[in-house]
Image 1 (cartoon, rainbow, N blue to C red):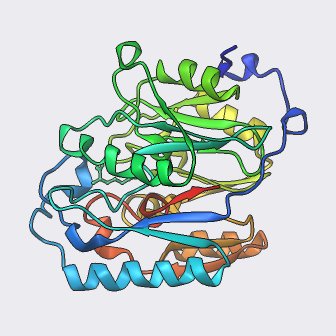
Image 2: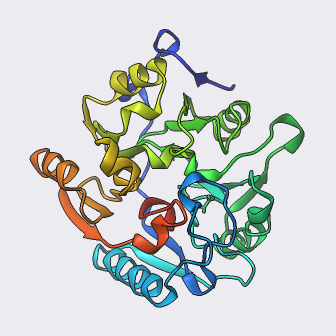
Image 3: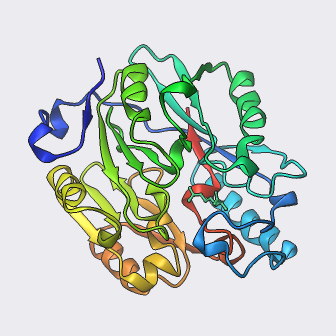
Length: 298
Ligand code: ARG
């Protein structure tokens, strides 16, 4: 049965009532060989068409790749494809799951922008080769769904956080909740600069999240605060210009984040996290940073 929660009075569980889930041990990266800004589908891309330094982008990506390896994650590298300059943002084409029984499943995205629709079959192939059950959503029931850009797993708990409003339709979460037998807390996004949930919301560990509060409604903020006891807030500058909330914390301890987020980094360190800074300036031109340049999977 679907369980999609949109306000605190619908919350009928606490964290300890939720089943546990293993943390993903693999990371998928797509080589930035064909990465560039060729069209404008989010406000950050404006003024950057044709403006990517390819060599610099390659260097930035290589640093991130090495860091995942050093953290002990298994890194799967997929080739980029000509004609798909945004494919490097491989958080967007899918949403993987591991069931209670250990079966690996993946829901494939229905991209909002026509320019990105052709990326999905290439990513699907990766899952086919890793023995995932592939799920295609009934596209007549919603408009679009952009994978882990908008649907984010809680840390080690069977709970999904689902952003909607710009790239993903609210309706899709009924289907996803049913398909994965998982409650979904749906959060409306209100600011086009924060067009994916992963631009304004980062799960750090079971009790901690990093957010940009101005990207949410009051209902959304209440929901976030009712589950997380430790909510770290990013300033407008660090959230909007440096994509502070597009950080990732794969193990609940080490946070990978765009460099220069001075205020957020202080708060993260005070809360006991280890901060690793990366330059993703070339990817910021396209409206993405650390979180959306990878997919965590089992
Ligand atoms: N240019 C890409 C787009 O607009 C960037 C995607 C970044 N991904 C993310 N999850 N924030 O689709």
